[in-house]
Length: 365
Image (cartoon, rainbow, N blue to C red):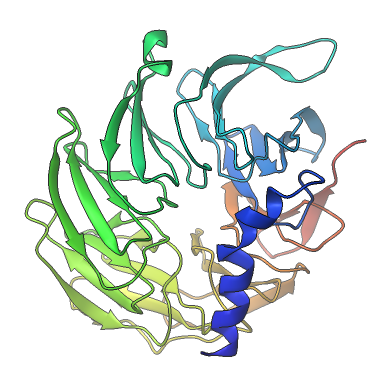
């Protein structure tokens, strides 16, 4: 087994077992989650932190504990609720209300709590209309009606199987769920019936994406990018990567951008079925999804670097060393890019369009 396989699998696949050990959540024990509503960045790194995007100031903190440990990316509803799942021994999915702050704890009140899951929450839930599609590590997809509080107790459960570590994808008619048991499953968005389930021959820790051609694309630990007919589930490999494809591809028109754990970065044209340019190899394994910006594509590496890559020819325009190790996909915030590295003194770094740090974020005591 390759050395990089050992490193990535040790950190990522074992992270949630380690984070649940005695002593509670610790920064750097596993990769954090990010989400934003445009004004506030929400960070899950043991606790849930709300950070002002203008200056990096902490607005509030919902504390973690030995039972409640938060690392899954939050989901933000149209009415502003922040929904986060616990990776601790308490498998709760909690909706926090940022507009209703407890004056004593300075943390938001819980709008509701769902306690029907049997394992840790790793994936971000998907908000689709007035429904929440929440995949859990117990192999089930829990569907909650966001306008009906009763569903918090009696969620619809769709049995998928395997560990579900990625946010579902939807085209409005179907919900697509990937699993570490090698499968991709399509579910009717209205009836919740399983329409098809297909095996890829390798675990799928990232989400499926819809290409500009209307087809579904999925990368896997079989080191292949596969194309699916979203209606029938018929699929075939369209690209052999050099190593595992861990993350979700980023889509821009007819182009898919993604990396592998050997550190290769690909630009695949869905219209021609070929690469736009020879793969770029930065400085380490790539497990985060690329971030499409106006002038370039940002690629984060396990080595703690951010690379700005030209979409036209794959040329590296600039590089910045953030530090630590980066597994979490950087988040866009207007002109800023927010990076959440591991093994650094700061929890977040806000970068401008040229990669210069605008502010770091370190939690208040």
